[in-house]
Image 1 (cartoon, rainbow, N blue to C red):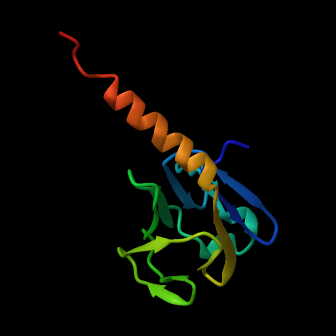
Image 2 (image 1 turned 90 degrees about the vertical axis):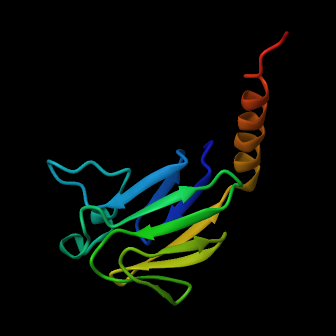
Length: 125
């Protein structure tokens, strides 16, 4: 599907196709990339719960934007904190489990293209 990563929930599958995505609960005034409210327990999810970001080296991290802790492989991520993500790690948000899986081939393709673009921006004399 051309995704950098996939976030699997019990009832859903979310393709991460941008270097940075916002997870949360969609409302009339808040637009999120991944609506966790569809997974159940919508009233427990913050509108802006977390950001999953791919860094320039192809590694992923999660930043907790909500008021309650998030768990990554049973390690507590307090509000405002960041935690690195690896393929097949378990992310628990308000008791809801998600599996995060990285598409290494797509990440490598994206990074290779980014290097080619940056090299192509040099001036030729």
